[in-house]
Length: 321
Image: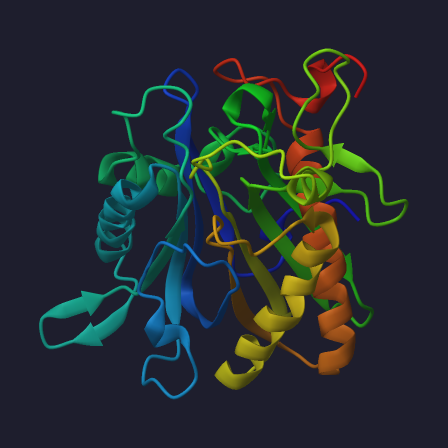
């Protein structure tokens, strides 16, 4: 199932990574425009140009999605994507020139690395210049550089998160793919067997604890770490109306619910974008099943492909995991 969102025609992906500061950003370019949708399930989201993605608003195309670290500071990075697109004449034609529509969402990654370094417009511009429709690197790169999971007991017990991709082929050249940044407060769960893939670590044994069990036992660190949120993009070459992309975003959220426990918490700002660019046809129920599978697989890959950054250990480096 593994594959890049860039395998869907019309999209390019680029990363900017700062390993030393443990932050970065990832851009999904669709210069010819794509029909957008969005679903927010977390209670602490951070985003830009979100409301216009919903049905009933006059803008029916976007030209890029930026996923960024840096918390709310990272929203400024979208200006670099705007500049990149403007230089190439991509956007809505107006009497004053083109106006690109760039939506974005952020994660809080200021708890590791250097909190004073956040993605800038220049960093996002570099990500655009690096964007490609070839296979893209996963793990601790781009917006996933400073991501982590399992923070119920604090950052000292956390495990490295990251960014993951997956694509599903639904026959007749129909594709749906997901790009997910996993920075969850909760754990990553294998939906097939229910085992914890990544979560809060027992420092004595190296094994993973279950956040849901810790919550029920009232074994929690307060105040809770704010370094959370799962954000991502689902893209398809199926031709959809805005009402349908909005519904597909809601359906795709099930992929997060299957693999993150707990998900959509009061400490997460979980946000999923959907982009439709193409002329293929597909039953919405079939497309929804594919989107859920792609999101669930991308979440798994995000933590399994991650590497240790800023002292937060990756799954592959944890003894007993």
